[in-house]
Length: 463
Ligand code: OOG
Ligand code: NI
Image 1: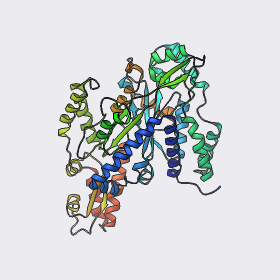
Image 2: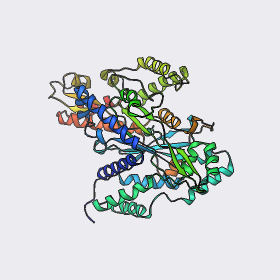
Image 3: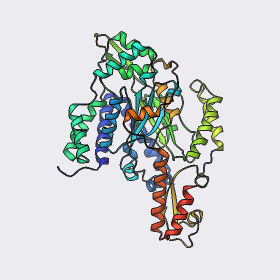
Image 4: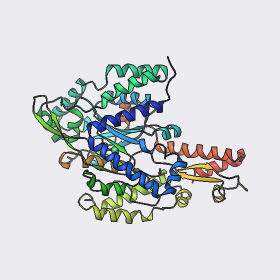
């Protein structure tokens, strides 16, 4: 056995290979990436302060390669093998997303790195959804779905062997990693041939377009890859000129001086030629391109405020897609009560921050004091996760005809974790750990003694 590669190297290789494959499969994705990169370069040029903040927080280097993707699978065994596959690349399941509340018959998690160094090396994430077979009312259709899924093999034998080797060795060497990436790509590839005839496809489509997408194909084709933008409003405006058809609204919080959480938009899914098993030629809509702008991670308190304000807006303008301008105004207005300066966000305990040591302190008594005299500097911690309401909006704008039959909403995290094979990580605990470690480290570097250090850390934690 040769030297093992760190997981971020394998993740980086895989993310680049996947992006290359998707660019070939969906050329519009390549155009979108180009648009985002041009606007990012111009934004960094025009805003040196933003550039400096990204650099200090460790986000500048990762920006150009930063992507998230999404896939959907049908069986518990598929989900649990994905967990093992992503673990080889240092990606853990974080968070539980119940989409049934939005009439979408899946529940999901995001596989991503947790460790700050791993994140700044490459934060590649995959939003992964499992079909809720239990939400298909028609029993015959449900059983047919299950049986079709049981017949398919979404992982190559070579990949399964390499996953076992990685688990045994505690990693993969360079040659094994290369083979692993090559084999893993097969799982995410697009297949033009459906596994069912046209009538069967139509029946699944009518039960829900997502059911057809998950059940009627050979594997969980990657359905989008998302570059990170520094100015999503400009991307949204410039998409039509680049030949891309944007969805009606940007999901998430409004434009702010200090971005929070996540804003997302996409160009709509393409109609792509497929061949059914009875030789009929047809079309299927699944794959699209998305853009995101990431802001700071919110604490549970900040998140409650976000959820409440967003709820208010959605009640005020329930038909956002038909009235995008009214929606945008309402959003802007509702969020005017959400503090938009770093000091208040930190002091009110609304967001997570990373601490950096500055100049030697004259008198160390309180966090506010240390920050005021420049002994501690703070940068917001980037939000690495997803938002259920936004995800539902992205799902919906990419479905055939935009129709969504009513499913019984029912969150079932327990069943999801059983199918996954482990509990999902708590996103808040992950951010809290990063904040705490950075503060502890900074205070040590400033030479602040044990007792006071502990008091300051506790004070920051309970903010
Ligand atoms: C996933 C949609 C959610 C996001 O960025 O919120 C998502 C899907 O369409 O499979 O990717
Ligand atoms: Ni996405």
